[in-house]
Image (cartoon, rainbow, N blue to C red; front, side, top):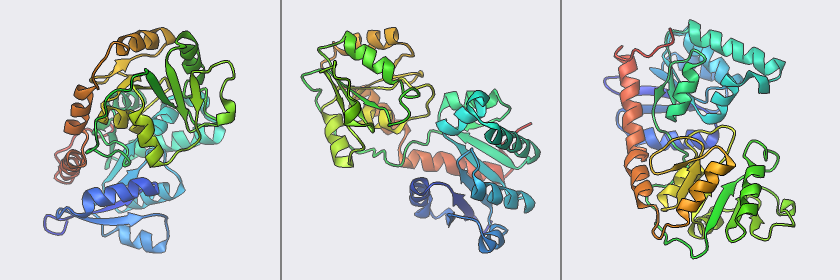
Length: 320
């Protein structure tokens, strides 16, 4: 370390690189080096780092090469896990042979490298990683698209449910459950984004399908919605739900979370919807919880503390 200034290298998808460059870039404790690929210059520069921060846990080729280089130079590595990465690690039945082999190699690398540490962005992801021998620390790092200072809208007069079901992944995101709930509630409006309007069931007049929408359009949809329905097969600390809570919307979600309705079945979701039907005011408690627990400042301080504990030898949740 150069004095008390921590020189860290960050690699991941562009949206997360930009986010963490902003999180750490204006902090006098950090000197940030961004990596978008792996080459000879990157290889040479890694030896000058204090720590490598890799987004995400499912290591693609450049991530893997940077991991191995840091391992060679005995530089601490922090792996940041999101929902999709964890889902692959705990569900081998969804993987082909090549992905299973990659999973095995990753587990061996995490086991062998005693200077490798893990962050899980949701408490249930931490528990799932523990089930496959990876000890992680829970730090709530939410989507970089999630703004904290937003307006809380009055609830619309018509009970309206918003859901994200991307085209081609309908089964994973619970489309059939949503459509069944829509059939049970003809007086409730259901809005699906990230799909195709051509796929809208012709027998359901209370369902609308949108493709990918702009941030301005998404803001309009939040304003005209009462709640978000998220009945996925697996999830992380989702951006859509956090954004909805910030705007005073209610959330039906598959995991326990403060000021959220937990539901994994159609029956549980229906019960939650019946309760939300009685609400006259926005979900102020949910909005307050997100502002107080998931801000960029809170993320920075918790990650900073985690990094410095590692470098001072005070962090003990290593893979054993």
